Image 1 (cartoon, one colour):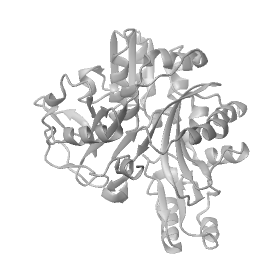
Image 2: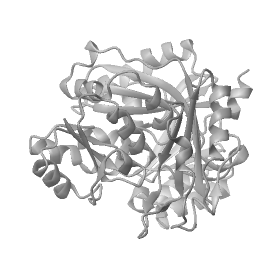
Image 3: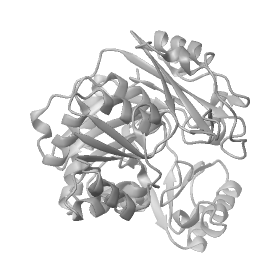
Image 4: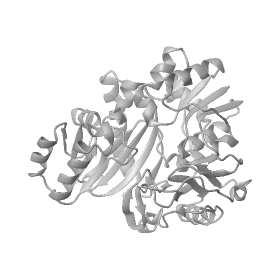
Length: 425
């Protein structure tokens, strides 16, 4: 089987690593890929939003199966483009990917089908949003409706901050057209937990829980990023929490999408807040999370191609999803200055330290080859250093030890990824 993976980050490297383990796969391509993915796949210089070129490549190279990693192409309708040409592709169609593509849509869906979430209002007029905020309880959360690389959420502690947030999102358009509509949401307190799932339109199977760290600096200080590290499973995702979510959130979401004529096939990422009033949905994503995928997929025991095909064919209920009884921690090595300004093109050394080590992974997020064939930095998040262990403490110690194996000039990381593990004890 020939497989094409669409994307270029740490998530796609983790997907490629899982795909490479399948005995059914003889050749992997990745568009556009990165320097790390190049060790597993033939990288193709086609952008994730170049649908016509991707489809043409898949046809010309007799690709049997395509996996879409990123949110933008899914929301843009890449799956529809592949299916129109009779090509097998993993991911939700455009009318289902709206679950992530529009926060206003997803909030309205949850309200209609009684899926637990924070109280909210949607606005497409900044003056009306300001009027509402003047009577609202602080702190409050402002969310750009569309895709914003995981950064379009502002937590405002005062009315002044909230008014500045409206200007930033709706008037200054900091997040582009994503801010044409804005969701104003009640501020929830509690632990955040991420849960990935495979869905075939009617059946849903949950993967291992995880917990992300979005802020740039230790102690959850600094700006929001795409994620500075993660661990799995979350000690706060208990059997009781799982039972509640299975009953009131997971299947309810799949059924709601089907009832709306938006059958969802692919991966649903549930961002949950474990509030004093029980679990509530913070957000949905319509694909694997990044960096959550880097701590979940390395522990998947199933052949990932079998699972993904079952999602497409509507036969997920015939499979038992299994994960190794291990823990995993991922520490992101970023370029100092991320998520604002940072230098690119800096040589990276130390990759050989990961060779032949089963419990360690070095997932490339922002890397490329320079003209001399060296691997250099090419993004804010450069690498995801992941380690597995018998428990979270062991995995965390191993992951942090492995961060010393890699060197580049402006290497930056958080030093408290998984500190919540200690708090759980």
